[in-house]
Image (cartoon, rainbow, N blue to C red; front, side, top):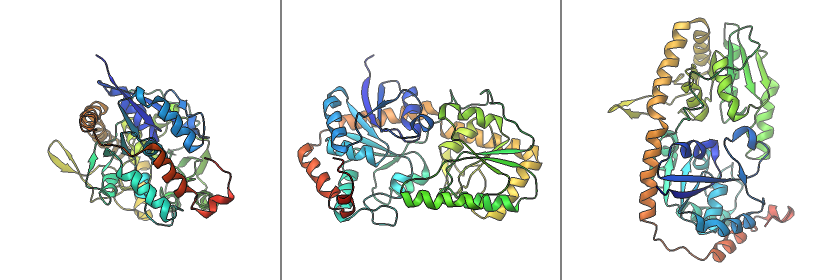
Length: 386
C-alpha cells in the first residue's frame, strides 16, 4: 500500500521520530536544524538544512515540497519556515512553544510589534493544533479553541524494563536527574529539598542548561554556585543511551514545574523506575472511562514535602516498587504509541481532505518576514543572516 508522505521541519523531543515508527498509512521524513547538541538530544537518521539562514531554508523547502502531501512542525523555527513557504502544516505543540508564544509581549521573547504581528499570522496559518499533554492543551486554549489532545507517545522499543543497564560505580542510593539545570525546570526547588533530606544518597545531575536566551543561560548556570554536596554534575547523555541509565539508577528526579510528566519522566517510568515529578492536582485524564490524576509525586512544589518523599523513596523498598508500578501502568495506558499513531493518522487524513485553503504568495510572506525581522533595531548591529 502506497503511503502518504509527510515532511517534519524539526523534531522537538524526538516526538516525530517516535510517532513515525508506529504509523501505518503515513511515512514521515525529518529535516532538522543544525545544533551543537543534535547527537545528544535527537534520535534516528539525521538530515539537516544546508544553511542556517532563514530564506535559504525556505528555498530548500520550496524545492522539495512537491514530494510531500503534508507538513508538520514542532516549534516556532519550523512554523516560520512552513508559513513563509506557503505549506499546509500541522503543529504538534510540546510545551514551551505555546507556554511562551512569540506573538505575546513578555519578558522572555524579545520581539517588537511587527515581529509579534508576523508570528501571530504564523500561528493562525496552522491547519491543526495538536497538544501532547494536558498542561500544553491548557496553554493552547488561551489562543485557540481548535486544540486537540493526542497524548505523548513513548518508544516502547527503547524504553522498557528489559533494557540492559549501564555499569555505574554505585556505593549508595543513587538518583538520576536528567532535566536541564534551570529555574524553569524547578532545579532550585529540588536542590533546596535535597539539603533538607535526612538520609544519605547521591544525585547524578546532567550538566545541561536552558539557553533560550543568553541571559537565561547565565542565570541558570549561576544555580551551580549553590549545588548541594551530594549532587554530581555529569556530561550530557546521548538520547539513544539514556534508557540504560534509567534502569541502572535507583530512582529519577524529574522536573518540578509544569504539572504533568514530560518526555523524560514518561520514558523513565516506562522503564519501571520510580520517578519524582510535580503533578498539578487539578489536571485529570480519562482512563477506562474514569477521570484520574497521574500517580506521580509530589503534588506540590513545596521543597519540604519533596524532601519527605525523597527520604521515603530511599528507605522504603515497598514504596518505591508501588510508585514505580503505578507510574508504569499510567504511562502504558496514556502513552501507548500504537493508539496515538492511529489517532494522528485520522487527524492527518482530515487535514488532507480539508486542505483547500488558498495561500498568499510566498514572495509576500518573505517580504512580511524581512520587514518584521529587521524592524528590530538590535538586529541592525548583528550579522546579516537572510
